Image 1: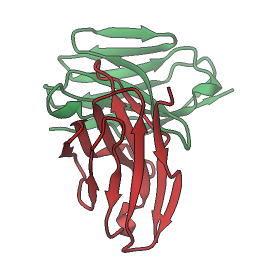
Image 2 (image 1 turned 135 degrees about the vertical axis):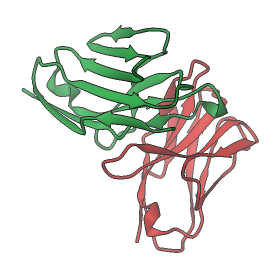
Image 3 (image 1 turned 180 degrees about the vertical axis):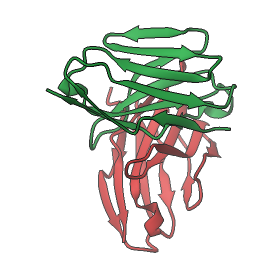
Length: 111
Length: 113
């Protein structure tokens, strides 16, 4: 199993541009999550999904959108990128016994 | 209500010492308390987790102590090694609403040789 994979690893965006961060898992987990981690801080939940077709907001959803058309994929969309969205983004999926496994992250800089 | 407070922010110990990281929470609905280890440039990795019906759990050199009445839990790293140098995060979640994790702010641990 590859586990949780994320692409790209790094990206630089100009203010106002849009992009999609990709996340995929091959463990057949129903639950998936997107977090952001600002320098020296803990992780904050952006959006989560409890299964294909079902998504919900987390703690910091503004400026982001998600979709979940398949069990495997959970892309995160940034519209009109702002400097405040400069962060490291982590995707995770969860087993039935609550264990969350994280991807390697995408480091995003908005200038 | 959802906050998890973690202390200290950083910790330096000599090899073989026992770093202790503490976390406190307010939400009594939390029923799952994991600890994550994160190395620079990597994603968090699940280290060990505990549920509130257990007061202590050990996995290898890592031990969680849980005090339900005080709403506190802590991580002890026994016989710490330089390879344990990393940032450690505590977290908490409930069964409700997608089992969303609320993270503490992290503790940077440095184990000197």
